[in-house]
Length: 208
Image (cartoon, rainbow, N blue to C red; front, side):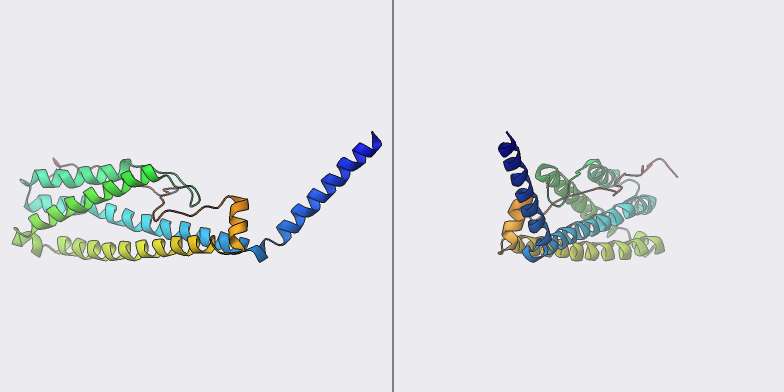
């Protein structure tokens, strides 16, 4: 019995030493690099979400300004408001290492609907010279254009971060560390809306 107990103790010691050796050598196996790449994805993704939120915040103001000059364009105005609300209704809670592709698709579809609705709204505004001359409208258009540019830049950085992460965990010896710790290649789009408020303020069309 004593020999069996001693044998078990020796096995525990060996396993503990092996685990400690592995942990102490993680930096040489790319562990730190994988962690850094993973955090870069999260940071880049949060920036994408922040810029989309910035655009979303401009929509109610834009709708109200256009409404003041083109109130009878209610179909277009309503389409923009509903598209924005659709974006707000999509809730995807993931980490960079666990993507929810189904919810991501819904989010992207909602964003595309908002893109289309905004395009229609801007096309309508071309028919109203007084609206185009409105100082607030022009300021909002400048902000919207700048936000669209920032969205494009943020998305590009996000895609690059994923590419760098995927390349890293396919290399040796990082691929061993990634396999042991469960890190997998990421799709070109992962969505996490942790700590990002996408609530849609009400746009009242009856407000004077």
